[in-house]
Image 1: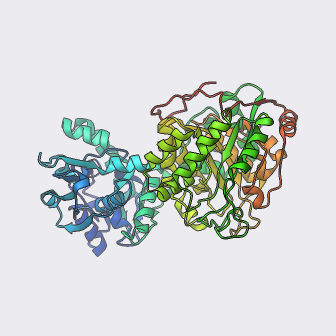
Image 2 (image 1 turned 90 degrees about the vertical axis):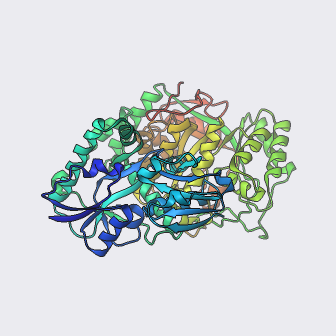
Image 3 (image 1 turned 180 degrees about the vertical axis):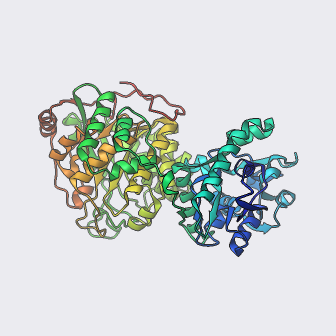
Length: 623
């Protein structure tokens, strides 16, 4: 028999109550003790907290099952007799290391209390320490039966989901020895039977087990677990930021049939991350393009391809992030550093208006001396002097920088910018929304979560934005899929993204060795984005890095918009791109590709997006 350790909490019994005792010798314990038994070698497999997985040894995880949540969990709480704003310390209950690590991450992040003193207490004693100005982490069944005196009850699962958009995984089956196929099969069989039994549980437990807990270790749960691992490792709370899965038994592996995936995407079905990765690995770019074009025609059945006359105004090239991939920025005292004057900006906007342009894309470097007042004054002046020009301005990175320079909250920063005249937000600064990649090419930039949170709060206010991907910086195909997945998850909430735009990294004058930044890679990524981003209405062909000829081909591979006729472009050109098109050239290329050019009066004015939370299927947008 295989000796294993598992927990006796209510949340675990769907995975444990039907364990075959002819296969397993079972030891029941609290999570921390289950982790110790595995660490000491007294058992070969344990249902252990993920913090133990990331600290105790080179474990492998049994695929497919876990204990987690995708929102409020009700059994992992921060509690106290007083509001969290009045707390001075937090007792960390030793029953589950995952919960106490999660609590510390959230206190430093969205809960905004990095100043609190934290200290460990004996397993199961957390609720007794929650007195006066001391809060406590309380988990398990005790968290579901709290005394009335504990008026503050912060659900850590709910805070995590709101902050990251991902599920949270609390515990997994893990071990360090090879597992026989029949052992993993027996674990899965027990889970299947236990999950089916949830409907017969007492009503209070049934709601908890079916609505608050999540037992599938699927792709989204793995993304959440990897995000937690990265944050916990960066904070010094665990010793490892990676883990591996036991390979599933060969007979249980199901090949992902590409033809079925292409048909699913073309029909608007939601592809999983594993399916998206399979498409990236598929060699036939013509088949990808055909499926993407079918999906494009389903959303935009006419021959029209839209574009807009816009002007990029890079108001400053002074930037403190010193990104390795950027050839545009300059340090403050560099002889080529600048901040545009009102007269220079007025000249550019006058030329835009005289040419019939309706929008300016205002972006710049992160200048330490430009606070919220600078942008408020600039926006009000621009709206007063050029009222017909839409202000598409400030990437999430810039918004985040302004917050710090001005000592403001994110909400206050956005509210003041909107009041001053901000109309929409460009999707710049996303690069690849995987922190491991961002740290390598732009270590001083905001995190992926921070970028997405700016967009989330902007969309919540009714602001629209674009979404971007800059690839070819050495990221993996799985990284590109994770980027698309995170955008799609946020789009499910408020449908605030008007379009997706990707471009390849241009390496000249930079310090990053390029990955695959070929035309074929760009066309493939556009096609897969059209299939994967089922809740995005528009895919834009960014011709600046690949040229108009390749952009023409993209109109048959998912793209329905030709982007902007940019009267000025400084950032990509600084890295070596030399493509430039006027209105005549843009329209000629659209016609030569077999489509009808239609000039937009504002950014995606043909979309009527309705505010409010979104369903998890396609976007509710109408032509």
